[in-house]
Amino acid sequence: MPDFGRAAIERSHARLGMTLTALTDDDARRPSLLPGWTVGHVLTHLARNADSLVRMLEGAAQGEIADQYPGGNEQRAGDIEAGAGRPAAGLVDDVMTAATRLEAATEATPEGVWRDGHGRVVSGVWALAELPFRRRREVEIHHVDLALGYGPADWPDDYVDEELERAVAGVAARLPDGAGVDLRATDTGRRWVIPEGSPAPAAVEMDRRRLLAWLVGRADGPALGPWKG
Image 1 (spheres, rainbow, N blue to C red):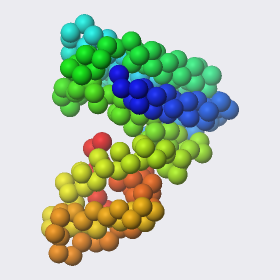
Image 2: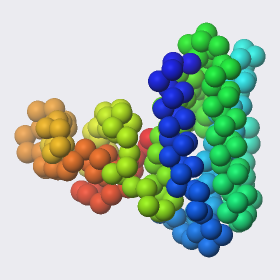
Image 3: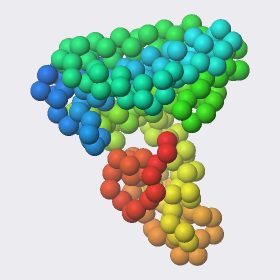
Image 4: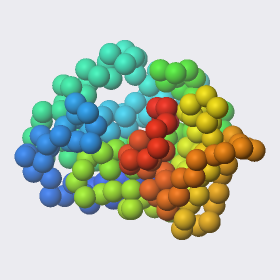
């Protein structure tokens, strides 16, 4: 695995662990920022997501295309619901132990498997090369969703820069018919007019972290279609 990918995952896991050091049972039962999910739901999801990625890595190492969730969305939802009501200590131990297992699996996966391997997610077959970024996305965005003091302003620069490019690339498909936007990151001077050459795009000016938070549905802004990250 590329060193930057593993190191980035570990840093995201470590920041999550710091947030969770003082988690109480009351905190675990509080609503998260995701409708219908408590903090316990989000943490259980992060743990099972880590396990699902280990499953795909281990399958690819055996020359197989393993399912992320063998039971599909039904299994995923059932596992999350089953674990969400646990005490804080159990939730924290689960999510951090699962994170450690994933880190070990990424270290053990040969370079050739990273280069050529695949796994199967609900939307189709996925190149394993995408896994490091996708795990980091899960942790960074859901860390915000916990509503425990970690926000978009805390996202690291390298994550923001990569995720912003990906999010901007998907904006055209989320705009109403005939609409255009002029996105401007006020802290860096970056600008994107979508679609290119749009005659009267609506200006959206924010620093790049808030701009990203809006594009991924974690901050208010002009109406867009749903993010499909």
